[in-house]
Amino acid sequence: MPEFAVFPSLKDKSVLVTGGAQGIGAEIVRAFATQGAKVGFIDLDSEGSAALAASIEGTVEYETCDLRDIDAQRNAIAALAGRLGNASVLVNNAARDDRHHWKDVTPEYWDERQATNLRHMFFAIQAVAPGMIEAGGGSIINLGSNSWWEASGGFPAYATAKSAVHGLSRTMARDLGKHRIRVNSIVPGWIMTERQKDLWATPETLAAHRERQCLPDLIEPVYVARMVLFLASDDAAMCTACNYMVEAGSI
Image (cartoon, rainbow, N blue to C red):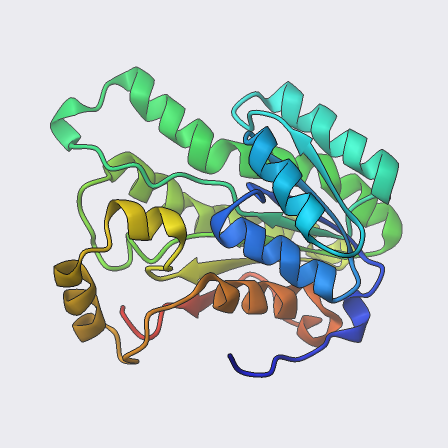
């Protein structure tokens, strides 16, 4: 593992991460805690959330809720703000890339996929932005996906939602920029979380993916977390309305 940078500007910052109990989200929570930030995260998995929080040294709090329920999300954000202060960093990470065939998609399934992968991002921004405005600035980081850049098939509702993340980031960067709130998107490639390894990472698919990437190494979640830290820090003070690729050159 390489040696990573320390960002002094992140110490004692209040950070909110959605979908923080496992996978990329859990790595993001750990990374901020290591920087000395006060980290709050939201996840539906109460058991996984408790285990993660107990495993990390530092200030880590969590709330359990279903992000598809916007009122529940708002209450969770308010509860974490009450314990950690208003978030100066928001990481909209929560999503699920469940596979589905286009012939099988119903209107109800389509709407549920947008609620799972997109809608909660906007309402999280809406909830935290007033506190950031009052504080004089902040950083919002939305997790997109390179799946639609690659024209990947097998999950049209997911790919559509993830493509919209980039539009959301750019329009909110314009609306919030006058308050010195930066809004960016991170574009992960195929990240080797436990979920990906368990469900889809076969020797054949991994070999094909390595051929597609410019770099030969598979991408671990820590590399997405490191990009999140940079965009949250003062080092990225003039970075907004952009996409930051963490995909080893696979597009």
